[in-house]
Length: 127
Image 1 (cartoon, one colour):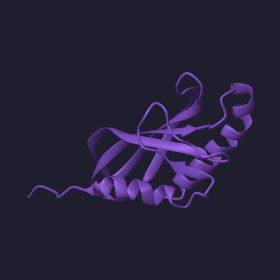
Image 2 (cartoon, rainbow, N blue to C red):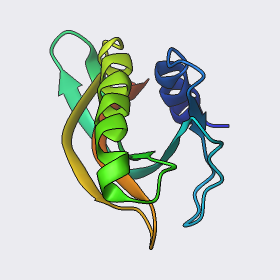
Image 3 (cartoon, rainbow, N blue to C red):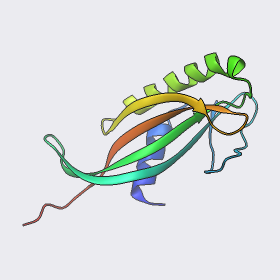
Image 4 (spheres, helix red, strand yellow):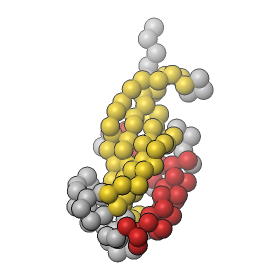
């Protein structure tokens, strides 16, 4: 596994066992009583951060998925799950997030999609 994926999973490892990481698929298996997390890198770019130096910034798409099929039933618990995920992400000094959006995940499930940026890899300065 790449260092970027390892760093992102480390940021998520503080979540309670009420979350399960799912492989990217349109039909995730989410056990009863848990919320699914699905993520992938959508962009990589270079950035210079005054306190950190030059880094690669990985932009992740992260879905917090409710196992409940009806939006009315899923909405409240899904918002609570979103706040838990955001709290976990904000513990990391190298993670920022934006644009948490409620949307359908597939024909039956709902999710919050979050854009997450992570300074994950130091880039050597050119001499």
